[in-house]
Image (cartoon, helix red, strand yellow):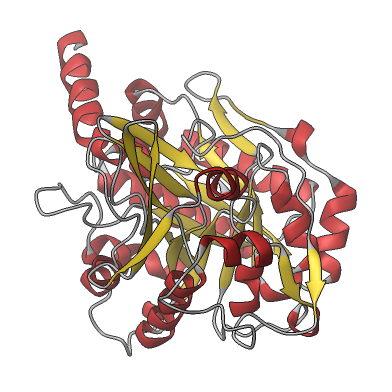
Length: 390
């Protein structure tokens, strides 16, 4: 029995390793120090200012990035569901959610972790991050509050105990639903699929369907985080069309992580446009399917600064610092539909892939074409003029 569990845990770790970069978890490499940013209103939008273009100059970004169009601030332009993540470690997102709340259907603060205390006892941590004043401000603009819950620190043994007993499943679900109702949230975003690395799918689907049913009885929304079905030509898929079809009856929306296509070991674009499209069509091939509307196409608002043999994620404030210091040249990659900035630090050449107005715009248009919604990871990391397009 001990050997069985060792083999099982090793298999889970190996299969799930390639999805580590894409996680929304608290240990994400996008975790950065808190930065206070200034947000300024403008009278015209980014299109009228000629900023949505393949031709980009660093000085235009530096000058314009913090200025949003005041007349569009409370107008939702994108027609479908929009989910905005907010993290405590990028507190600029709290301001973004309040200022542009009318543009978001759901706001998901990354606050909560579900812990397995024993084989039948569960608790939720992160309550100290809950800010009731901020919640009221966001709701005032019409957005619904759906905090993210991460299955944090769970072992294979914990999952086995959960799946082996209907009573334990009910105890776990009750812990979640009571917490959500006691705090008067509008629902939850659940992140658990990637943690199992594609193992025990039928058991996990059984649990999630019961969780969705319980949440809907309380009139709460249920959004499920999903990894991309493919992270490259040789990747192993841990989510399929059949999985999504089984889950769809009890899931209100699927937050699809169509980003983190590249990393410091494989530098390149954050989310090639064709790959994003392929991820959606592989999970829901038919555009007329009602499930297609439940897919929230993931769009990154962070970027990456690569150098030979290294580099890593950067957020908006760091991107602006790079532009001010190094004044890089930009080029538009027609294959991936992303801008890349090239600069040198000493003798070392860097390649920076960070969202631009043009790359954001074409991805919004892709979501419209596909008939999906959008999920934004995460609004504290982006540039403020992005929201003119949403």
